[in-house]
Amino acid sequence: MLRSTLLAAARSPQVRAVVESGPFDPLVSRFVAGATAADALATARVLTLDRLVTLDHLGEDIAERAQADANVAAYEHVLGLLGDAGLADRVEVSVKLSAFGQSLETDGDKIALEGARRVCAAAAAVGTTVTVDMEDHTTTDRTLETVRELRVDHPWVGAVVQAHLRRTEADCRDLAGPGSRVRLCKGAYDEPASVAYRERAEVEASFARCLGVLTAGEGLPMVATHDPRLIDLARRLGRERAVAYELQMLHGVRPAAQKALAAEGETVRVYLPYGTEWFGYFMRRLGERPANLAFFLRSLMSRG
Image 1 (cartoon, rainbow, N blue to C red):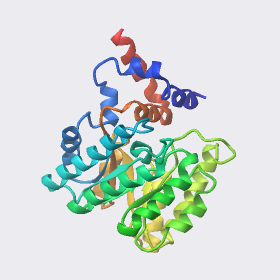
Image 2: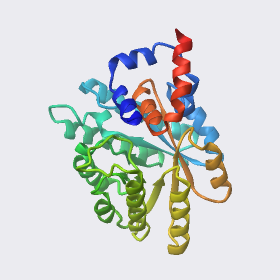
Image 3: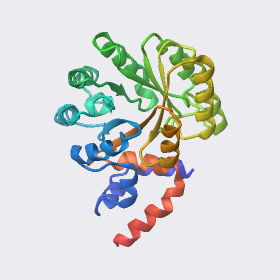
Image 4: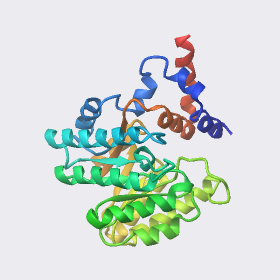
């Protein structure tokens, strides 16, 4: 119930106005690198001392073509900075197609594909890669089709699948081909039972099945979870099947565990968001870990 309430709040203009009325909150900065590309690079430079990074320029569900173009330009800019800073071999980018115009009423899919192609070209120019994030279930088919289109010219483009969707085990079989990069996560969207598992045990069981499919395939499984049991499963399957894999975790979530895993020789990649449009992302993090809510509410009250 609390998670659903927080996710609903993430879509509320009134809640957003209150949250964004103050300075960049210390709790927000735990999860978000900052507002600018310079902030993101400064944080990434520290993280890449022992880990890898994927940068996410925040901003999704845009309503105008100009916003889509601005988001694409922001990625081109940060990729240029990564190349200049010599970080492209350790830092890639993650993109949401709704930030590139996928949800626009006219030619949304075409516009998003064009924008993603520009970002992929910019990534290739500096020697890094792109992963296409997954959003709610209504966009899954269109997003995977866009990934297929992008892979024609850039076969390294990463796809994301969500274990809480009932379809995902089959999607993993389709995606686990030679050279394919696939990020498996539990899923952060509040989906109906008709398309998604709603119980935690069901989601975890689906994650384990999907992980089994990916580690038996010919691509690179990117295992995005903070669950120690699923991390242990990924490590065991990786050893038993002698396959390369990445462990991926969110910036600010279990940082000590991230460093410990990296120290043990694991490839750990940190999902690092930045930008002014941090509200929706932050509220989803609260929805995943409601224990943070008390700290957040205390911060809001102090502003009054």
